[in-house]
Amino acid sequence: MNYFQTIRDAVILLALVIIPAVFLRANLRDPSELSWLDRALLQVSGPVQYVAEWAADGATSVIEDYVYLVDVNSDNDQLRAENNRLRREMRVSRGDAQRVHELESLLGLRERLATETMTARVIAKGISPSFRVVRLAVDQGEQAGLRAGMPVVANEGLVGQVRRVSGRFADVLLTIDPESRVDVVVGEGRARGRIEGIGERSRYRCRIQFDRADDQVAVGDEVFTSGLGKKFPASILIGYVSKIGEQEFGLHQEGEVTPSVDFTRLDEVLILTSGPKDSDAL
Amino acid sequence: MHGARGSIIIVLVAFAMLLAQSVFSRVLAPYPFSPYLGLPLVFALGTAPGVKVLRGAATAFTIGYLYDLFTANPLGLHTFVFVVGYLTAWLVGYLLTFRGIAFEMVLTFALTVLLGGLLELIRGFTPGGMSWSGVTLAIALFASAFATALVAPIVFAVVRWIDPESERAPT
Image 1 (spheres, rainbow over the protein chains, first blue to last red):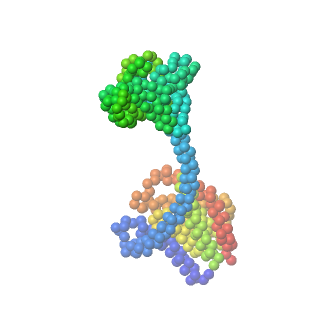
Image 2 (image 1 turned 135 degrees about the vertical axis):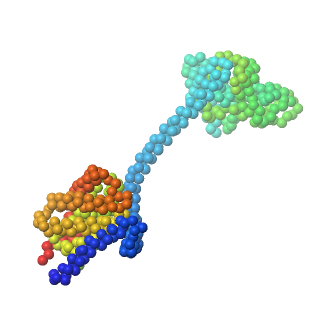
Image 3 (image 1 turned 90 degrees about the vertical axis):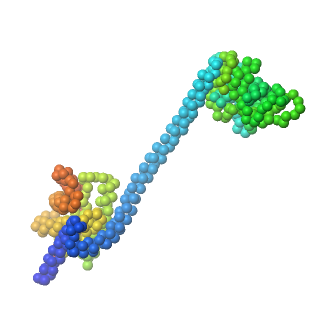
């Protein structure tokens, strides 16, 4: 290595130390105090820095996103499992809340009814081919003191009556059953009549026969038990008039009643265990 | 020609290490034991007998410049410190004859503490910089130097593998 090469290398080395120091000095200073040299250096370094940072950000974000995505996958699995667990718990809680709500309603109903009652849980439903409930069984029976003929009510209205009892269970005759007959009063005019189940297996309907042909009733009128015959307490809601037959010359007027109780959704019922007293409960 | 190609590859490796360091720091959050992967690369160049001073300093300059650009530090900070670090390592390598893993680790530890301190000192002159307390700064410096010293033999080996010429003493 000759003398000039040594000098050249030393100068380049010195420049390699001084140049970054100058750059650094220009970058560390307050921008308001920049000299013309500082401004020139920043002018040169700015675009280079911008492009390089843009490339670095891109490369770094791709790698980091990939690394984070690995975590996201495991996080997703955990969250999915937790979500499933919470959904299961929510379904159970909803069921419990629904049951509590029904029990609270029944409790309110029991307080409103002026008679002794017993709560029973629906344990079986006979379902027709068109998915209509045609028969109910409850978890109280002879041992609990039930007897055939006791009225069965729900918060929405009359369900029917106990048809037969065995040791721990009882069958309920629904108001829509063809064997069911209940004396009723209808609407504000207190039109008297009697309803009986039609027994249609595709819809919940009862036939109503009014005592007088000229009773003023309309579709939508409420139908209540009359209390006649002391079989059912008076004023228990049964349903709503859904159809009025054509009024012809004759002794009776007929129509149809849609029960207020949705038999499909029944889970809890009240059985009136003491003899019927006067009631305006429902 | 071989030397220039080796330097380019080393610069690319430095860039890869910078990305790895960034990902490593964010994902594993090893603070304060965050290794400074660029410095042992420069020390390896400084102590390699086959690397000419000018080439080594230029490579250190480029690596430092890359660090400045990609770590959003004031431009020139790492460039200056890396060139100074390279020259210091070259001087140490010139004065001392023994080599080996222990040498690489001790050299890396000592120079990382010094250069890390220099970096923080310069950062202290930037507006809003140097918010460290003395104890916190010392812990951060020594922990980082310790972590860097642990990975130093690997980085030295990588440099030797990339540029075998670097181990050949000049004739």
